[in-house]
Length: 128
Image (cartoon, rainbow, N blue to C red):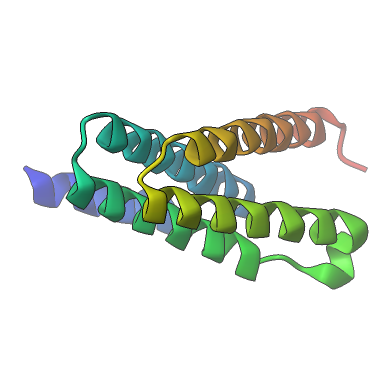
């Protein structure tokens, strides 16, 4: 059963557009951030570390994919936000505090909504 799910997930990533992959990365980052917060609330230190690690891996991937030539100031701003998220999540991991992760979650939700709206807007425009 899990093989089928794994194969499905792999296929859906391989066939996704760049926009869909971006949205999927944000969704996974949000999910892992929430799970890290939950692990801290449950005093499950091992799970906290696991989820923060996954969360940070996704943020690093988003950071590494920035194109400063195309994105200009937007890419620079995103870079600063990703740096903030990485710093705050590292502090949360070290100090075992959920508040920095809650700040990260707020930023991620805002970015996710912004990208979702931007993609919808682009798709709604007639082809030129």
